[in-house]
Image 1: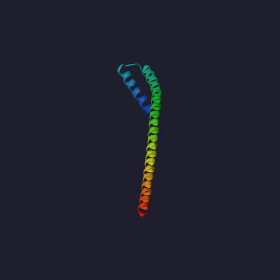
Image 2: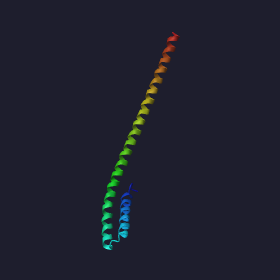
Image 3: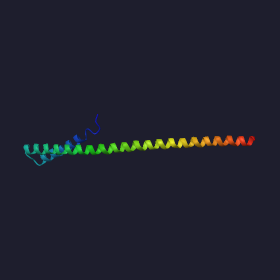
Image 4: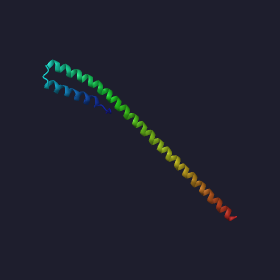
Length: 104
């Protein structure tokens, strides 16, 4: 299922219903109402497509940034673990040297 598929439809139908209600309230003729509603539906469908594209672009960028941040955090953890292992290895080596020196 495509993400954001209903955005243009919701925008278009909302605008169409508002225009329809306005035409009924102001007692437009049937032909004027049909033309206004048709024009409104077309214009707001196009606007909905543009809004959908913008929203999906922002969402995609945010997902990329989140993935990059997670990768950086993972790499930092791996580096920290490697440093801790190196320090532990140095301590063991130092302790072995101290034992050798004391034995002599």
